[in-house]
Length: 164
Image 1 (cartoon, rainbow, N blue to C red):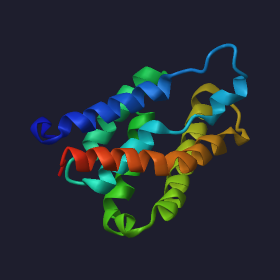
Image 2 (image 1 turned 90 degrees about the vertical axis):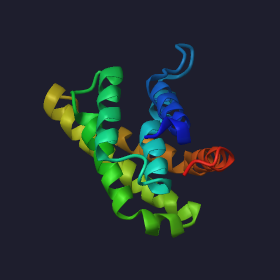
Image 3 (image 1 turned 180 degrees about the vertical axis):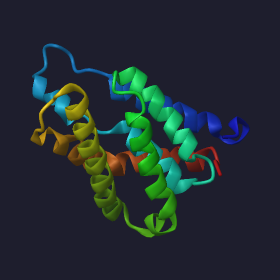
Image 4 (image 1 turned 120 degrees about the horizontal axis):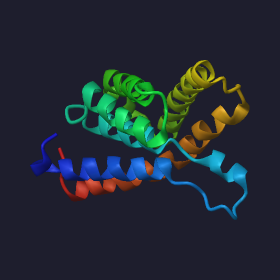
């Protein structure tokens, strides 16, 4: 990434997504609201890879995922491989994904996040013996619902700062 040509905005958005990923709901709120957290990091990585595939690659996504592993206390490499998988799919089909409407992109986001959450649940089940639940659907559904807002905000800043 070239910080002189908007790389700072890409790094800032990724940093903000990492902060939102580890942010917890207040204790006074019901515990089930914590399940309604979107996959912020996956959404931001998907946006930047889809819009600017030459600026964010597999190694960058993997390193960002390693940072997320440390922040979220996940098995080392789990988020890295999940973000690298999302990056590869977005990188492979970015021309087609750009032509989709935002509603169609919501479906793609749902499938990508659902796949990554299922893989996360599988690894956590093997590593820590956590059982499966329907909770893997919540991040995918919330990511799908919040995608239009994430897309519009990041696209606005990308165009405003002329990041190419």
